[in-house]
Image 1 (cartoon, rainbow, N blue to C red):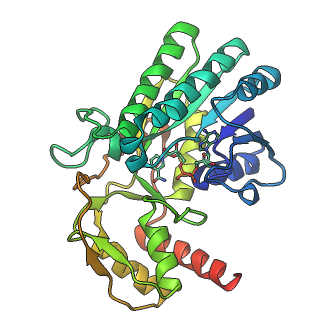
Image 2 (cartoon, protein in one colour; image 1 turned 135 degrees about the vertical axis):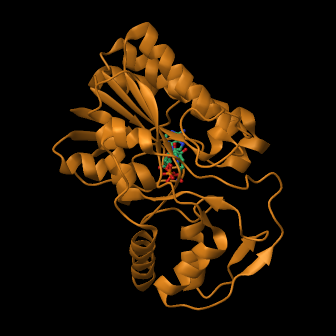
Length: 310
Ligand SMILES: NC(=O)c1ccc[n+]([C@@H]2O[C@H](COP(=O)([O-])OP(=O)(O)OC[C@H]3O[C@@H](n4cnc5c(N)ncnc54)[C@H](O)[C@@H]3O)[C@@H](O)[C@H]2O)c1
């Protein structure tokens, strides 16, 4: 396949790009480098530095006539989406429309979309959330991801372009950016290694479903090969982990034992999130393969190696 990965210079997109290239696909990357890095893009993938909203992005898609679009570029800062909802809509919704309008005019045959499990479902009603859990996003970010899924359904219905939405849990692993609000494992790793204090917001018993980036990349590959009716799949582990436990596991993995400080809780922060991923097992034959223990060790080793390379 001839594939365009947007956001391919970022954390998840670059792992997806690597895997697709290793599988023999031709891959190009579109990224404005706002939070991604040129170095993350493998040399065999051509990098187009442009914004998803731009006329240049539209022209590129129409000229190259990609078979598939793997869409990871996004405004993904939940807090920024609250303080500047218009920017979130511009990047996440108008950006997607720009790409899809170009794609529908140029024979696009498949879309894989990086959606979110946590932010779409909102505060869980009970147990792990499956794809049919009520959708009550609490932020413009969650709303824009859900709207994007609906827009993709429109492009399927109207123009016959199939899609798969992958609703990720909290993705972690090498190359995660520690700047900003997301990526608690990256943030703790860098601070522990730099001998700086680590702050846990509130009591630290808020939970998330942490899924390793290699497993997420495999889910993208499975989604590209999925030929049934367009749908959404949760991509997580079904394991609920709180921040205090995460901090302890990271200390063990890094061999650095320094207690975290507790700061004020974040107002409005979701308390719990864990995903039921049975549907991905059934539909994509996908299951996570990397345990939290193993994934944290690999991530800690990577951050430690970056530190040595400073
Ligand atoms: N990291 C997670 O835990 C997580 C969870 C759920 C969903 N997601 C989704 O996965 C995708 C990738 O996230 P990530 O963690 O790799 O973040 P990231 O910041 O590392 O990657 C995003 C990439 O998109 C690029 N980008 C941003 N705005 C752009 C624009 N307007 N035009 C072109 N490129 C632009 C950035 O430069 C960056 O390379 C996002 O869509 C995010 O919403 C991530």
